[in-house]
Image 1 (cartoon, one colour):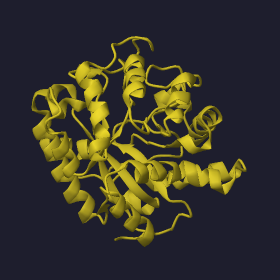
Image 2 (cartoon, helix red, strand yellow):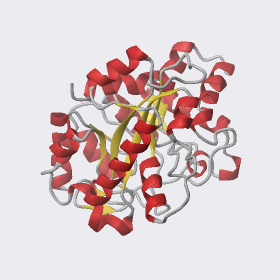
Image 3 (cartoon, one colour):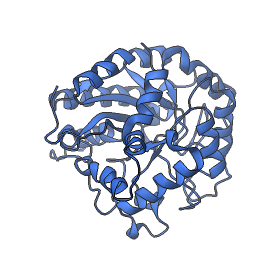
Image 4 (cartoon, helix red, strand yellow):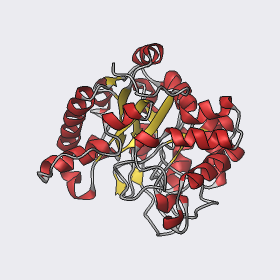
Length: 324
């Protein structure tokens, strides 16, 4: 495994980046190669030990979601492993990564359209290494309804019967549920039927930035009550009502606000890099991720808290929820 140029004192986890989609779009559109925000070289330079690579299907490709997802996986495996990242898709592999101090990646699903209209291929996705699954993006599908940007926080239906069945079955395959992008009713339904920790891999504090994609205090408390973790999203529009003002300080505000409501064991990082077109000042890519730890240190947070935020909280939940 490749080693970081500057070793971080914190086991750092980024719980959400859309890099596989960006790689696949570059291939389809025959764009030249460029170094993406969460490319392996940035991960290693930034001292990120574990990267969650999300597999996202845009609305225009829903009809071919399964093929699109497999293509993203194939491209991501090639790029990640060529770049020095090890595949980490089990508790044993995760423990090995921690022991070796290397850099790895794992897949998540963002939007359940890849499953079609049943759960038949869920075990196949598990065998392919998917360890986090968000059934909904910001649109309806067979599993329920996602939150629609700018349409009011309380809008949207909940999980369907099939969606509830999916959430109940995830632990059988060592997969954790992700409620980012869900409508409030779907979040409640997930919390009602989940049999273990629930994640919000890339969501922020609604009371600081009242956009539909962010979580209310009640939602944050409920996710924490499952033992889950909320990953703070770096999208400027989810950090500040005036996105032009977004900076590392904005990220710290959301970390502190969520920790105040949920407790120190339930907040982490979910950058959304390569799924966002703008970034906060001072955080252009994952190569700069340790500036978050440095900012928390300047605010005199205990090292134990910083270690939890930078990756320890997600590490705890992954160890408890993934397949052996």
